[in-house]
Length: 464
Ligand code: GDP
Ligand code: IMO
Ligand code: MG
Image 1 (tube, rainbow, N blue to C red):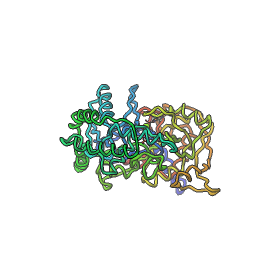
Image 2 (cartoon, rainbow, N blue to C red):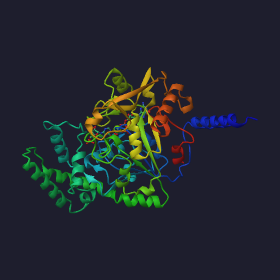
Image 3 (cartoon, protein in one colour):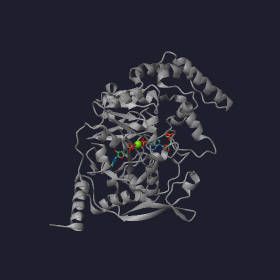
Image 4 (cartoon, helix red, strand yellow):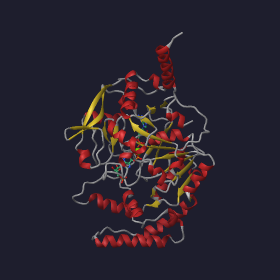
């Protein structure tokens, strides 16, 4: 019989094998957890794919912030969906899709997205509910954004030009219009008040852009008819579901580094993309959240302007862009590409409290001879692992890299982590040990079945 340390070692190895042998979790859909899935970097981490995959196990998927600035891509076989406002869970029949109060809604964009999904055979109207507390985007929000982004002597944020920021401005300034106002009889009263406000500001600042407020009013009255049957108190709906033992998946848009408070301000979006936003953006209290899952690429990208410490502007960055098809799903803009940033991930893990990480797009690194990983920052000649608050400080960061050997073979089609090439497994282990966050899943392709789960992981337990 094997005794002592050897026996312990063998048992440990047995556990490790079991852990790495789990190809895909295959539990029953009768668990009770409410989980938040959100971006751990600057957006486009593959949240849509992961939410779609996990949503099978939930009764509802709720979006809590952002608007149609998001583009969440889901592949189901050879069918491609890009979800913008509507939660990715809508692609699963029977799963309730909820647009929470923290989201800003452009009715034209919403109705067009609904139409696209209906044409693809999705029964959107029977699955979708919209918070009557969500705020409404108007065409003049886009006009304001265009003026603000385009003015002289301003470093543009490089927004998606969807009117997101100006709509949130009206919300915080307490003059915004909510879905409840849109679908009520006195919508015109609310609208005229907002329009007057905008006209006053325009004349005070000598802005000559023409806006046809009456035409917008007529158009929005029509939108109201289409939206009214879907609008309700979704906070009450979600909390009631939870009381009945049902489970909710909260879908974040953008990423923590674009969060209005924790991102690289002012190069951020205007909402709370971090985990806290899931509660304020849906009305589900923190006491009902059972787990928080961060989604991160095996490298990193950013769309739009702003500091990006581990950006690779060489040919290698271009190679990643091509291999990863890194072009914005909303605006088509090329995404800036760079290397996995450990201090950044540790920071987003801290402010979100990640229980587990999903690492996506491992396959994009398949061809590389070696893979740089930013393990620390150098600022004023000092090594640090902390994320500075000011833009100028983040811009001054010099990344400190460790270079890991590549695996130089395709990982597509691999369905168990244990079957990944050795160097790929070492890469995952390295990220796990450096970030201090469990890696519960690795994605090696855009399809649902191109996702590996780590047996015995916290993630697996949360999904049970
Ligand atoms: P999201 O905004 O976080 O939902 O991400 P996007 O949909 O904007 O961008 C992620 C892109 O990567 C999409 O085109 C996905 O289909 C694709 N994708 C997701 N996971 C993987 C993966 O593991 N490998 C590859 N090659 N593509 C992936
Ligand atoms: P998903 O959900 C990546 C970026 C814009 C810009 C900044 C502000 O698909 O990950 P905004 O229009 O929101 O005022 O733009 O935020 N941005 C995103 N970048 N993915 C997104 O969403 C984004 N949504 C906004 O490029 O830099
Ligand atoms: Mg996206």
